[in-house]
Amino acid sequence: MSKSVFLDDLKIGQQWHGGPIEVTEADIIRFASEYDPQPMHIDTAAAANGRFGGIIASGWHVAAVVMRDFVEKAPFGDTPLLGLKIDDLQWRLAVRPGDVLRITREILDVARSRSKPDRGVLTMRMTVTNQDDAVVMSFVNLMQMPARTDAGN
Image (cartoon, rainbow, N blue to C red; front, side):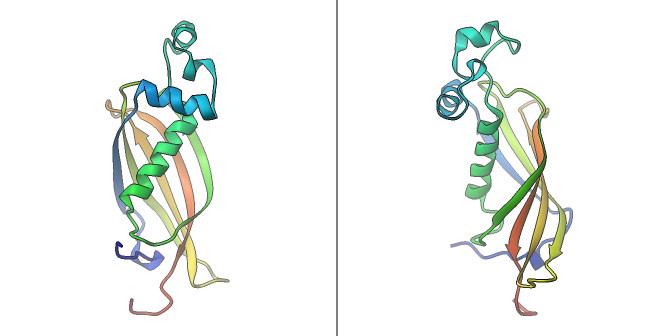
């Protein structure tokens, strides 16, 4: 197990990077067939004739692979986190087969709870870019995180 990281260990402005995540046509179609079966995600002929000119990934697919990368990279070690909400979710550019995604996670705020001092809320901005450094998705994530209960460790 990795070392636990607590709310008190984090500072505004800290960043972590994720990826690279290559998005394949097979992955796009597989995910969308189960969770977002729209023609632009699952039907190559229809997608080729549609407004995007080809298959594109579901935004939910992009969000799911970003979440998996976060869990696998474990920037907070084995600390249990609880997602509270996502604000300002934007799918800014279509993700296409062959795109390679990278994620920048930046701490915007760290706030200990006044009513429950054993925890607090971490606010992070997630920015997902493709191989051309174009932003394809961004959002602000609020997570509940344990705080240190003693002054030392």
